[in-house]
Length: 317
Image (tube, rainbow, N blue to C red):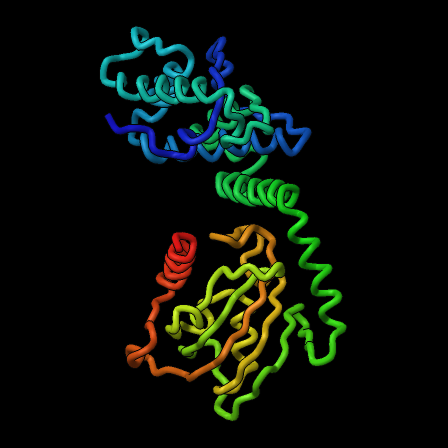
């Protein structure tokens, strides 16, 4: 039998209680809070996924009832033999939900599971009923709401980084020679070159030295004595903007707000919401062909991997 490999296996929580055939009908739920909507949307999105993947053909209605019977208590004896696999699927889902009861909705212990709303969402989704929201709307709501909740949690944990960066930038922006752009990026011109200015689609070769506001070095091609080549539009936003202000031969000092760096993501020594400081020297604009000796030609996918490897190497020293 195919294993259940959908969203529902990741997260839920609880055993379902089915008391009558009437409880297996599509109906309109009562959604009073954001948490109510999350529970219902979770069930609805997964119900549609189950139906599309497992329940097809002329006997779809029979299979739906078989699945719901399995969710109830695995009462296989009441279902014809050819639907035993569907009943087992229902049992598997119910067991998975019950086993994860303490984990909370979507693995978040702060989000209480509402069994009835998830159950109704599953039923509505399986029976292809777009009550309250469509399956696509349910999935979009889940994604955006959970991202917002996660961001809120991250900000609560790493909020001091954000405040420290804002304070630094407010004071730094008043210093002579510091230029602040409309996006909030700040930079100083250490040396202004006379060459061409790259566009977003150009490949460039640079030397750089990156630090946190406390002076901690998190990455430096200067220390490695190895310039790096990458596409202008495949790095953090602060770099993409700054590089398009720099004629070849220039050296700028960049003060990058967290929202133009890694935001709530962070990586390596860079904690979420960290403002970053770089000294960047633009050595050349490269052709699309492989970089000349002395530089590394990076694909868009390799850029982040390279930074992580560099950070790991530095931590081991």
